Image 1 (cartoon, rainbow over the protein chains, first blue to last red):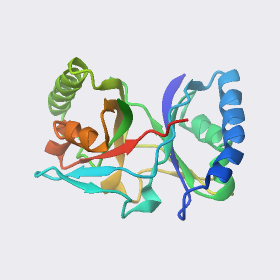
Image 2 (image 1 turned 45 degrees about the horizontal axis):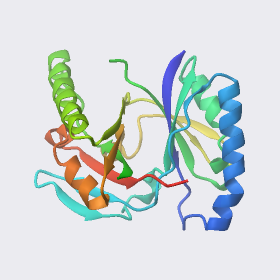
Image 3 (image 1 turned 135 degrees about the vertical axis):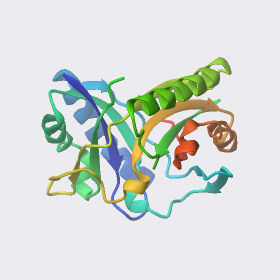
Length: 112
Length: 111
């Protein structure tokens, strides 16, 4: 088995309301539980606030989010075990966020 | 203390195995320093510059590399800091800046 990271990239538009968030949480929990029971979940990871800061350049200038490239926004991650990249991508298809658009970026962990 | 995710973005890849080894040493030194100061919760993982993207309700699978390669996520760590400004200060020692990369500092949602 190899290790992969799922980066959850939400659809563009406003973030979920507290009510919407409460409605999707059980779907995420049930998906995570299923991945875990099938031996694919290394760590559920963490959801992220849609705020933040960017530290950039030689001067290490600190600027506030939200971010210019929102299509590249990451709002959470998980650690996954799969036999290869194709299987990891198949597993990503169950992600509840995809029901409203967005994308899951599936990335092999570097072996060091 | 609060938890923050550092996303390391846009760094140039090492040009040789020797270069990769030097880069790795700098990362180890930096992460050890964060750890000694009690700021490192999880050193996280470096990622290969390859991958796949599963998109939308159709679950379309496309190969990397990615359109926005200049913003590609190359790895992540979880740190502990007093607040967002403090977390951003902590990121300034990161070796990613020597590779023209940058750090995105994001508060972890409290559940």
